[in-house]
Length: 258
Image 1 (spheres, rainbow, N blue to C red):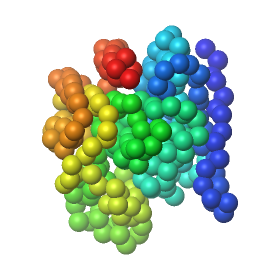
Image 2: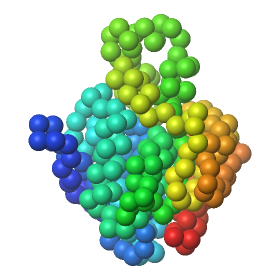
Image 3: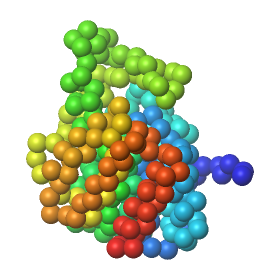
Image 4: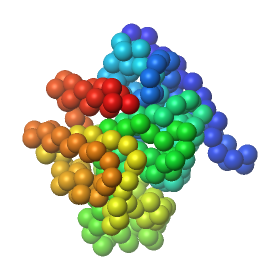
């Protein structure tokens, strides 16, 4: 199949304008919006599976790359969670004409919850959330809290630490800016009310986001229907054919309710 070229969205102020790459499929119903993970991109396996499902269903579907990710402009190390949250809000506000269904994977799950909070009470308040191994507060709980003092010192004194990645041949820069900015967006410790139904998919053999983090998230979600699906043999990617079937069923269920 021929690779579809990206479309482009200008974001940022006049002095810091940059372009986000996105792909949009027209259709009916609440638009499904894909929010990818840390250093992932909009053409990853789960996003492609949802794009095919949306096409077959005639459902509107939007996916994009955050700044410094995939085909979007910028160097990864120059961005923080605040930037990526702003990218998500800009994409939704400019490309969605009705309340969306947000599908967030890993870091995208955290961004989905933050986006829902920002859009609460607006014309684009999400119709539902599907969260895949949601890495809520990951910069603090799954990075900083797990790091030895030597790595913490490197980050604070040198500005970044290069972390080896099993998903890429290139190391991932974990910057001081990323850690410090993440603290501005922490959700655990207070109630979380996204204002819509939530379905969480979580593998129990996930080495990156332990399944108990998903249970912790359920305990913090109040006022909205919540479903948690635990996949006993599931890893962090949740990209097997069976996993993709579960994902599509979860999104379809939210879409039907919406």
